[in-house]
Image: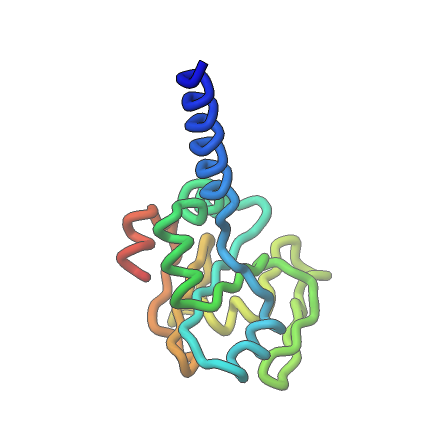
Length: 156
């Protein structure tokens, strides 16, 4: 009888531990929240740009941004912003207004913010795009590819 109780208690404990680990997520914030956060406490920033149609963006959500090591490093050392690159929202950041000016004329129009932060020298943009910025909001590194958990940890 005592063995049964011990086994049940162990099972319950393991279940609760697994549930607690599964509930860990990255503390994603918006650009508006980032503006306030940077004003209070400068910190490095990671920005993940995605689109609803992007298969590798979805894979990063499933495979990379669910890894406990990635979650812990991002939550501890970065403000994390996730943004749909095709968003039609007007965003006020650092006193400036950013929009998606071309959404009426182009089916896959890119918002101004990813264009500013993630454009390459030839103005090309591809997804998924992950941008790392330092405490002064200067771009440190840009990735325009799927980052495996290992590569993400190295980048962090």
